[in-house]
Image (tube, rainbow, N blue to C red; front, side, top):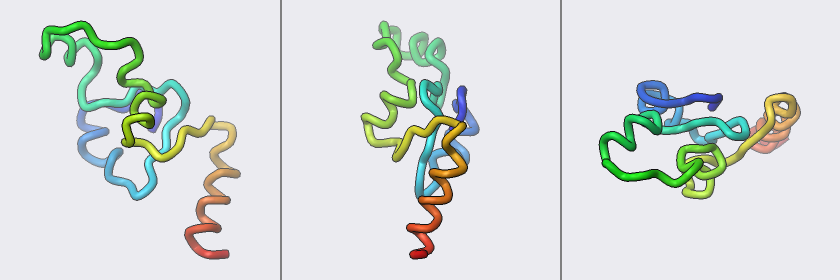
Length: 83
């Protein structure tokens, strides 16, 4: 997931993968922070929709810098294909 991944993208397909990966610091959620704040009428913790927070709560498997994606995906695919 890239920054931002919210709304229909996250609800429709971004969270449906067997392996959920994000770039560092990406905003991830079903609605943006402003909409959530207006809906629940409460102050939200800083960074509550950051990739790091989402991973800490179990919705992401990995956070990988874009520059490292090619090599990481190669490693992941070789493990999944048992090569």
